[in-house]
Amino acid sequence: MVRIMNRTRKRELASRASVADTFVSRLVGLLGRRELAAGEGLVITRTNSVHSLGMRFAIDVVHLDRHGRVCRLVAPLLPWRVGPVVRGGDCVIELPAGVVAATGIAVGDEIEIIPLVGTHI
Image 1 (cartoon, helix red, strand yellow):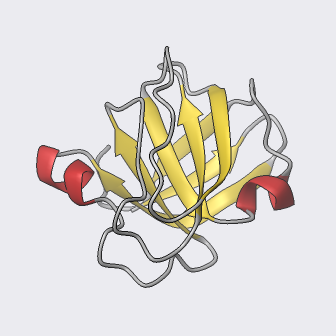
Image 2 (cartoon, rainbow, N blue to C red):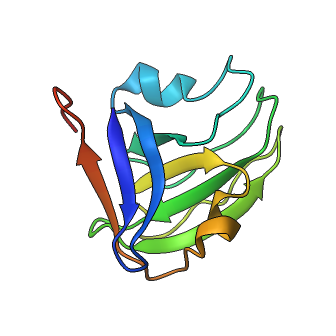
């Protein structure tokens, strides 16, 4: 589990986010879940695109470059959609729909992913 902070705006994006860093965990993502609750999120490493095929709910998608800067936002990505392939994207953060608007995150913001005790990213 990790905490996700927007260092530029000094706002928390997620207090407890999972990390998908293996082939299987990246493939599965949020599939099978009924919702993504407030404070939750998913960090998907080594990717520049995501989809919501098979999902039951909308999500906000934050694409980061290799330096942890926001390079694209998709808010919201509705169920059964394919998101864009983001050139220069290195990592994706999936958040509950509405988080992008509520926190004011913007392209160029610096994001920090903070491992919680016992977590490796």
